[in-house]
Image 1: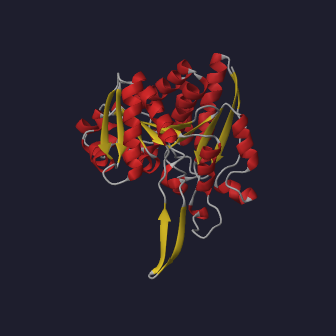
Image 2: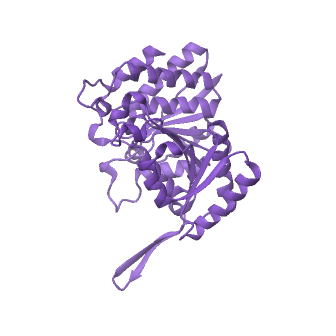
Image 3: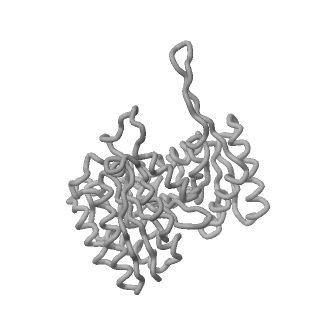
Length: 355
């Protein structure tokens, strides 16, 4: 297969970790006879610096024509001025919207070799394997917002808005994933307070009961879910929820394995290229030091091969290589504890070597 994979290194540690993901993809192509064309384009803060736009049209057009997109990270203190006309994160929100990437898939899995890195007890987190499916292009992040005068100064508002169709399509993505996993689907809402959540509950119930009667389905309020993730994370298989709740819960769940450096994500739509990235952000405090953990980006590359190109065997090979590297005891600083740590490049070397 010939595929075009657009690389968006972005800001902070993005260029360092995407470079290791690219190396792994090059090895996969060489081993299997595939041909990957991997042009790089600007996004985020570096794009603001170069052309004043966090998502230049050249970048967006390249992504639209590609098979898939591998992103590093965007943002950093350099672009944090709240009075700025635009910020790096605006580029990320726009690319999701422009590519129709309405479902964010974020696997949260613990590794036996790293259970002691988790802030929770080993007996609580061992065996955790959750796939979060977060609605990505609707809700309060994309609803009407603004400010207006108030006797005390100002008041601000944001509108959470969802349609039946937006809910149906993301619930189907989650239900299809549950069928391929352990057959359990949990929908998270706040239907005791929010009208938008009441629509979520009504639509999700209808879709699952009529189209996926084979699934074990339940509903949990978002505040209860926040507690359950800490007390009994093993009970969950696939979890689907709206944009704001998904943003918060997936960040909470990311601490279960003990490091953000091990968690990839995929943003997909009904058709066209998907966007694949680590969840850890740009980490500007360690940028340029060659100490960032590239494994989340490498695992995001595996998700890309699986979801955008149906290369399941190739994705399996990458995930197995990462597992073997961890079993061999190789650790970057974020997961080394008091032990010896290796660099970003060295971790890439070991994964490439295993492949």
